Amino acid sequence: MMPKQPGVSRREFLSKSIVAIGSFIGASLLYTVGRFVISPSLKKRANSWAEVGPVEELKVDVPTRVTYTIERSDGWIERTDIKTAWVRRYANGRYDVFDPKCTHLGCPYHWDEASKSFLCPCHIAGFDITGKVIAGPPPKPLGKYAYKVEKGRLYIQE
Amino acid sequence: MRSKVITWIDERLEFSPRLKYFLDRLVPRGVGWWYTLGSATLFLFILQVVTGIALTMYYSPSPDHAYKSVEFITNEVSGGRLIRGIHHWSSSGIVVLSVLHGLRTFFFGAYKYPRELTWILGVLLLVIVLAFSFTGYLLPWDQKAYWATVVGTSIPGSVPYIGDLLFKLMRGGTEVGAVTLVRFYSLHVIILPLVAAALIGLHIYLVVKLGISAPPDDLKRGKKPYG
Image 1 (cartoon, chains in turn yellow, brown):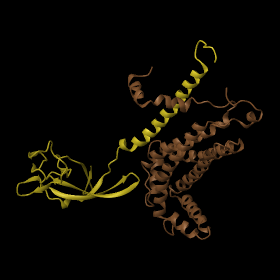
Image 2 (cartoon, chains in turn cyan, blue; image 1 turned 90 degrees about the vertical axis):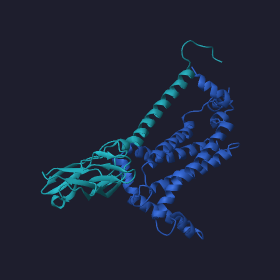
Image 3 (tube, chains in turn yellow, purple; image 1 turned 90 degrees about the horizontal axis):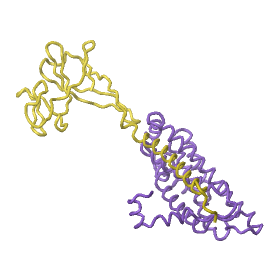
Image 4 (cartoon, chains in turn purple, orange; image 1 turned 135 degrees about the vertical axis):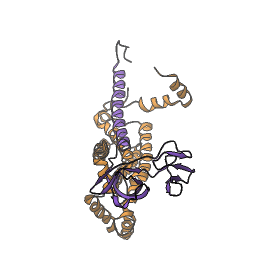
């Protein structure tokens, strides 16, 4: 047995070095793997413009349900989704493009011509033609999409 | 230094004397770099487990998606190229290191009584390592992977009498296809890791229990291995 010497012993130095090097390797690995796992969750999806069709087909002040397709990538899969939206055409050439999901719990609603309102059957919710809540539990008015008209055709962006 | 929580847990688990028995054991004189090959192999195995689990987060074992998902890992996911690279190169490293570890054991005569069982488990582990390499090679589902598996599964087909059965068992039919890919995936990520972990556990248990054999030169010269 070696007599106890002042300062750090060889054994102590080595065991501390092992812990330090091991922690460094572990931390680098944890950082790399953590970044790898989290990565796609934080990636923003760029929404592209989707063509809805010619504007003449939309009646003025009568909301119309339109369908359109968007190409999007889902991880490593390229897919085509068929989506819907409600479009109100104003006489002055403006449009309202409504997100087709009720703001309460996401049910699809429909336009009721008799009561001149959007009705959601899930929890008896109602919205007026501008999207404002007039009945039921929804916390906020209907969501709107961006739109543009080019050469007489309507394009929307979610 | 040690927190109260750790002391409280350790009082019940009595883990620290076991850890001390595992780490602070006597090793014979003259033990050097040659004796680190087993630990190096174990380190690469742990690295393969960590990076492999990460890769399963995005890999899709189906002929329609396998190649695309690997491409996604490599080009879209942060650090994907690095994780795949580590898994790829460590797999070669593990083969090289296990063989060197085996050669060291052989030439130092360390497989002799009472360590024959350690040697036998080690040989089985080498077979497992090669099985990992073979099944993992198919997963990227590119041309190289596909044809390597076509050839690799044809070779056991030439075994007398049972060759045809082996060939069909490995492929899950007569063609290398969807069934082959999924069974290779299952072997690679579930069956082989479980078997490997069990064998490694036993192998290390024996190493700790029986101790490391002294270098042959020292034994020949009649030196005492310890003290």
